Length: 330
Image 1 (cartoon, rainbow, N blue to C red):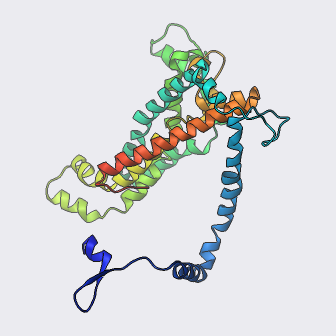
Image 2: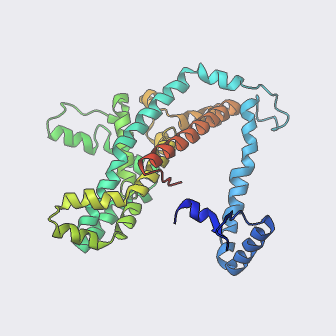
Image 3: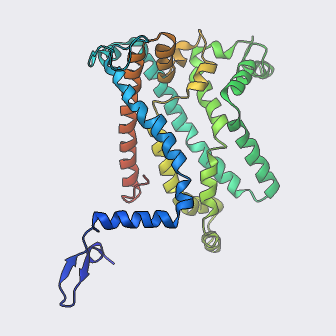
């Protein structure tokens, strides 16, 4: 049925009349009838709604301190209003722009490498025929996700030390002549942050992809094999097209988070030697707000980053919808 036919109703005389929207009173009545019919299930979301209202919506009022000169002895209402002064300071703050460069550098590396690896890993796991081996690979790849950055960071600090695992391997291979603390080298930090994040999250990122692949009709693969399609051709023409919506969703979320590098990872791996390449926007906001007590300036930075992230989210959604025949995943 076409959109025009779906939007109108035929009368006995052959004329067409628009269906129109249901009256507000009828829609409210139907809502409560549906809620009454499913009240057990609907009631389960009430705690989540309350939690979101208290911790996500009420604190929005606190963003006003970005336009004030707020100190710990002030209240939100008593702090003097300064308008856009905090945002003007951001534009001339060298250390802020250094953190922006580091954030974008690390985030683009994670996007270029870390976005693709879970897809490849999920396809490899899905293609494995041995059940026990598949479960073993999944368990091993998922495990780092459940370890905090405190634990993983401690492991990396030990491995990258002068007497650590990596130096022993490099010395044995003859790639270096003397050991060095790799984490103290600023030029290597972006790669350390990127690869360690991929190691931690790649396995966990395969879950959605594996769930989608499990729903693909196996008769597609059978027909492709009958037609002589190779395994790679089946992946390219069957598996990936069926995954395009979830890939698009993950891409949108990844792009919208380009300015939100992992704070936990940064606080663990950053030190006085690599700070020039390790300081990201989140750690800069944390340092300005919690360490130096400049809450107004930190809030202004956070608000600006949030606005840009929303713009990136909308833009990424528009672009992916164009690539998916104008079908938006959000």
